Length: 89
Image (cartoon, rainbow, N blue to C red):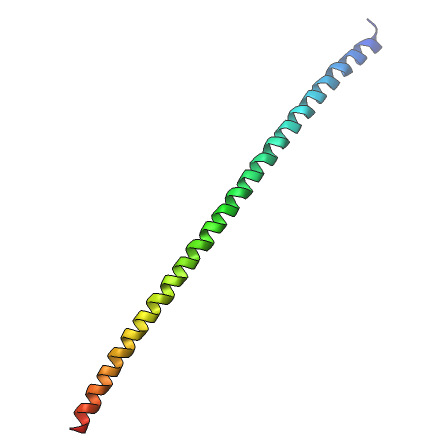
């Protein structure tokens, strides 16, 4: 075997190895793209669920705020009424 044949055969082996590695990397990229899509879908689902939860919490806070505001208002009115009633006597 001549020196040129050894180099050519060595390159052919190396070229096969490089092509196999490129094929493997393509498969890894495809897998990563699928994983990224799944992760994006999960993030979107979490965002949707968080928005629903946030809306529920805000609604409850508004209702409780209104109720407590009314209670404080009634107590304040009663105290003022008692004070005024006591002063007028």
